[in-house]
Image: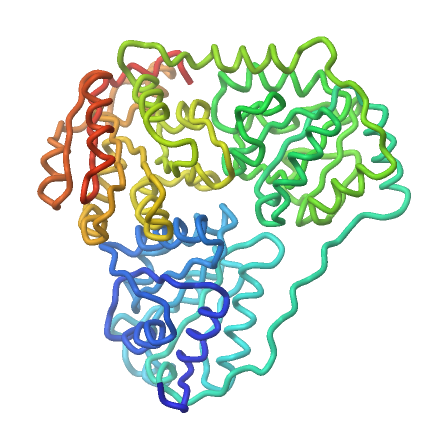
Length: 537
């Protein structure tokens, strides 16, 4: 490599130092210098078939290796194609660097073809947006990484003008030192400790901030030591292994699960929200406790400006360090002594029986039984997601990936591709409805190029089943929710993968068995009735 560094060299090298090894997108003439700089820095660029899917692949990598995600898009339509996944990253707290090519400012004054103000497009859905300059390339790279990863993570956009990309630049001489953990002190901490020592029916609601704070072990130890059962958001599933006696699984989407979980929370004499971000939750989780009669401690990365709930004590602090501080000077006592926790776990399991002859719960049960406990699963939005998020047990965090805040369709396939790319030795399975699969069918070509035995399970019911169910519940006529049947197994084979159509448990079991030794991706089209979700959500 030449001793002379360009602005994009500076940016790429700083991203490499931050742990980034993969970037995804669609190239255009305006980003060729940028892509070359990424490759020379050691960051492999992967061609996707659409920028939206590219962003989800980048997110899938992030969830496995922890490094910021990188999305590359060219000028105009390329950048705009990524709007959905960038908004999703903002709502799902994903650190993502969105790198777009743009026409030089002087040229844009008298040139109109594909000229679009990317910064105005991305400003409402990112934590910050910059235009790269040669003079400040190092500072911009450092600031972008800091903003994307500090506090609650999120996307940061950098527009890269064509001539700036290759312009000579100097690195920024400093790296931002990581901030020390913030721990509560003073009277509020004393009060919180007293509430914990007095509590006989405590419960924790755990969310995304715990993953960011690397506090999973602390949460587990606190739960075990003080006998505190744990409910998680879907993105925090597995923070406490869901087979553990005090794990009550995930919550957020299912009214059926809420019928059991909300009354349990209402019985509690102490609610401890640990990194709980209610952006994942539905209206049933607005004010899920009575603040006038219940003690509530909220430990979060940012102040509560969402007003989904309120707490009696608010700590803007590190989740793990705060739990450790609460434990100090506290002698554990017996909790939930009437067996309510075990009884609730049984009721939640019984609410989602896995013994039906065939249907969505049978598909989920067979896949869970056939795949290793540490398999990574991804899931699209739809009726199947509600069932799977309750039924899919996680033994560790970040092993069920989905779009929770924005609930975008078409995410499962690219998330799985990215996750499997980051950890080729691990089994990875995605779950899509047939409509969601059709949105991103072109990415099966991307999967084929990777030549990994990723499993793509498709629930085939020729309908937007969740919307069709809501339509019937509102006694509205059927409109705009049904579509044609297709041979998804044949589509998979046309892209070079293995394709199976299954109509029962035996066929599904055999397809999953064959996937273990497959030399490319495997698509399993599970044909079910569109009304098989009735009464199950």
